[in-house]
Amino acid sequence: MTDYLHIHGIRKEFGDVVATEHVELKVEQGEFMTFLGPSGSGKSTTLYILAGFQEPTAGDILLNGKSVLGIPSNKRNIGMVFQRYTLFPHMSVADNVAFPLTVRKTPKAEIAERVAKVLKLVRLEGYEDRMPAQMSGGQQQRVALARALVYDPPVLLMDEPLSALDKKLREEIQHEIRRIHQETGVTVLYVTHDQEEALRLSDRIAIFNQGRIEQVGTGPELYAHPATHFVADFIGNNAFLSGSLAGKVDGKASFRFPDGTELNGVPLHGEGTSGSAAELMLRPERIDLATTAGGEGASLPVSVSDISFLGDCTSVEAMTSWGEPLNIRLNFGHSLIQGISRGDNLYVNWNCEDAHVFVKT
Image (cartoon, rainbow, N blue to C red; front, side, top):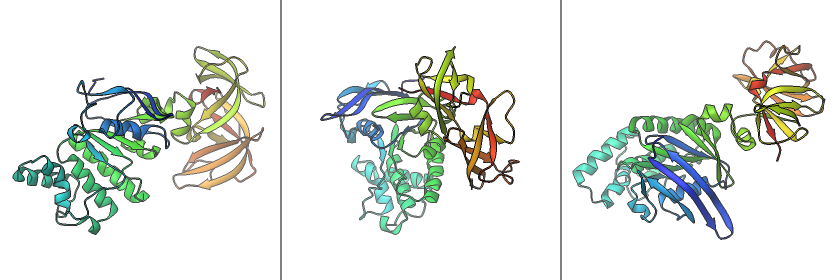
């Protein structure tokens, strides 16, 4: 991986509070990298340090091998799009977009050319003379995006830019952001707490938790191979079942459920000895529901407690024999969808390789 952008050991303290602790990340040129995590996890703080709005307590940020620390935010030439559109209400769309070029004393002919080009990119040709108050929220956010792109910044930072929009409009603008990234090739660092948004937009995702990055990877990597319990719980739907570690061989666990059932060959995360409390994580769509126990895979008897039709799938909540709930998602057309009812006694079956065991700490 090239060291186009290197966030190196960033630590930020606010008095006695440590907002970020040794944040380490390398981003390739042209990559769409998303910072994903709950509120207060350090993702926006890291972004603001990169933008120059805050100074780190320790660490460095290198762009093309050179530190940007000590350079004022308005001199870093980094684009920024905020949650709130921050458009100048007394300026037209064209003047709002032109503003970064105007303050740079760019020649008027070049400003006109660049503004026209970037408004075409965000599909707002013909809106040059509109005022922000005459535009929808989605259109205003596209104006803000055009303003951030008009001077060809090497890096574009986006801090939860779509959180104020409704779901349908948010999905439309997500598609536009993805298209614009593909057309421009600009390096994007994007902050969100919405996992679906992160999965839809990103080349890679950095999962933040309590000021640290817990794991970096593509969406499929994080979903299929979570490194920690937090990542497994934060990415995608999941089901956790309690139990204990019965043994381990070559990074694989033997796991024992409260009813005594044991599984072998389950991917193991964390250190522990035989008898250590642990949890088994399953993705709901990797669990099958059947009238009989599976063959070579794992099986548990369950009782159906709730059924919800969701369109493309049906969500089934089942209860284990020791009273722990388990969520299952059956694809549309599954043979059992029309024939099951609350209270039915059935079996859940899955492949041990699709599960993960996390030792409790």
